[in-house]
Image (cartoon, rainbow, N blue to C red; front, side, top):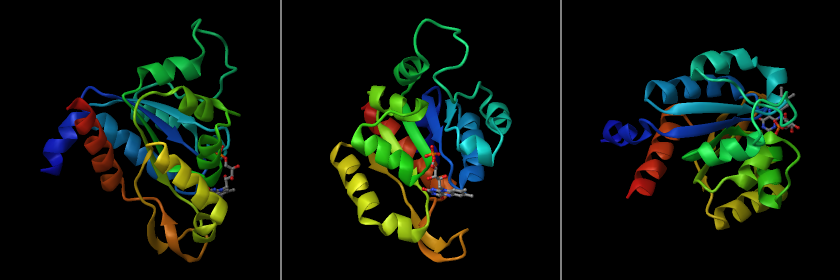
Length: 191
Ligand SMILES: Cc1cc2nc3c(=O)[nH]c(=O)nc-3n(C[C@H](O)[C@H](O)[C@H](O)COP(=O)(O)O)c2cc1C
């Protein structure tokens, strides 16, 4: 049943926002899986995410250029945050940091990913990942509630042991669960 649903990813353009969470390495598997399911994947990495892993991983696995800055050499007249937003059937942010979630909720646009979020008219799916105390922080909770009210969908985070040595809610959702959530959204937006 889920595999049938995953067919809705075929031929869709997914903009995958990748933030500087310790779970960033898992996003490489996500990019690869989405691409193997037939989706076009355009990865947008925050500048901080590039300090944790190389964009080259995402470039190879997504089979596409990785975007990061709005201030790169000009190759097209249209600013990148607008052209990416217009091309997207789904904006998926995984892993999403507390910082990115805060930017989205507050309408701030300090970087390519946050600017793209504001310009996007497609559905948005966020997979947060952070330390459990960060996730439980009232400011983060408020931002997530704001985004939920705005119609943004969330998958996870899950409970479990965390890279920071503690355990609690904050683990990135399993890659399969993220893919299924993305497929659900794309399937319902087809109907
Ligand atoms: C090794 C390391 C791991 C981090 N993991 C997380 C995380 O899982 N979640 C989170 O919200 N922030 C995490 N941070 C903090 C963010 O990187 C920091 O808030 C940063 O400003 C977010 O930038 P970005 O949203 O532009 O990627 C981590 C920082 C470091 C150095």
